[in-house]
Image: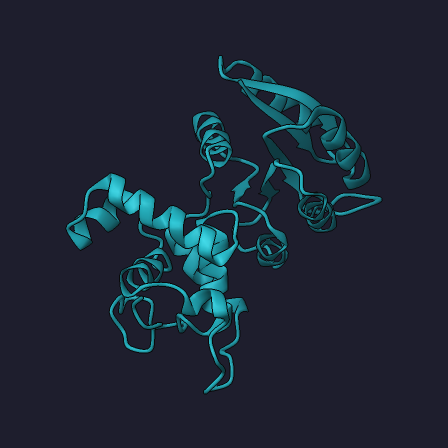
Length: 231
């Protein structure tokens, strides 16, 4: 059973999402909260798998609450709720450790599917939105900046896969493009996340852009030079 906490300052949103998710056999809404501080209390009390987190809330906003959840070491994954697909706060939430975001008018089945994906360790941000967000908000690092040690530890194959992840490709698409099995790609992605010390593939993509490993506007070149050496 996937345990969910919903944090939103609008009772209508909380009630609506609770009703939708509780109709699913494998999802249980264990608590709701009207502000970020209350959300933190409920996360500590109920230990959910997923938190549906509004950004703009009183007392403590969703970004600060997400940061607190990450710092606490809680296993909960955060799925941001927003009204606009390019809300300027969304990228800040992703940097804080969120595993993706949803529009508040998301269809019922997509809402349930997103909760399942995030609970399973995945991320929920469409490929086009991923690229627009990162290219808009991430400045190019100064030329010549060394890559972080974590990125330098990646093999050539892992580097290739990380660049492909920056395009928003799924595991199945990666497998087809690289002539690998789905299981092999999944293993490579898990290894990349472990080496980079990140929670999911979305955080890996953010790190790749911020470090200069992938340059905005050049994500279509999955074999571009400059990656770490093979080991």
